[in-house]
Image (cartoon, rainbow, N blue to C red; front, side, top):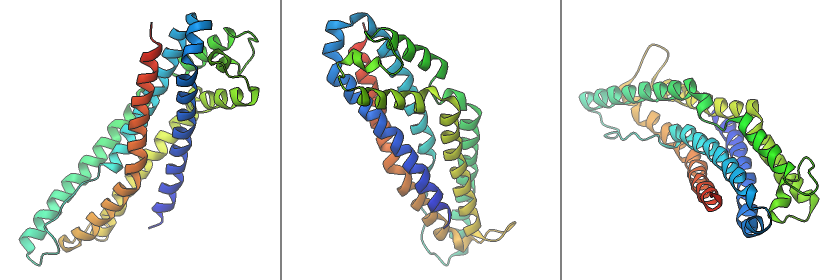
Length: 237
């Protein structure tokens, strides 16, 4: 299955988003008392920034849920044609529903991510609140003393949340993988224009494989969305 390699590459990109965002959340949690003491007026802006980031992570979780949520149970490798045909009808209906779900998500792609203009406006406002008032300095508000570390965290905000096209491409690629996975399952059922009911167990097995691959990143994204929400609420006035 050549699609597995593409899935692995996308999962790696999702992992990069999760890793960098977790580091940001950790920095916020570690520095929130410092922020409250020395820069209390910045709490609202940082809370709003985290909310925008959460919006993106929830969107990615929704997109990955299409594949991680693949569920289809067949009666087994039955030689009974009626049972096999029933399984085929159910699987075909299921695949049609998955395509519709993917199309709906693609139609609302701009709602699945942060408002990038708000992200870089909030980012720049936070930079301006620091003593140095330089690009990349916002994490000084949390007590970060190492310039290199501040720039790394700042770059993560900019690359994953303020870059509109980059996030759209990640969402679109994930949705495209879903479409390819559905097409691969359909291929398992038979050549174009034909569906063999006795091939349903093999097709269901392929569905299960993709669900297994995407379930860990989906669960990680959901957990991260919850952590972003908690971090944001801890800063809310």
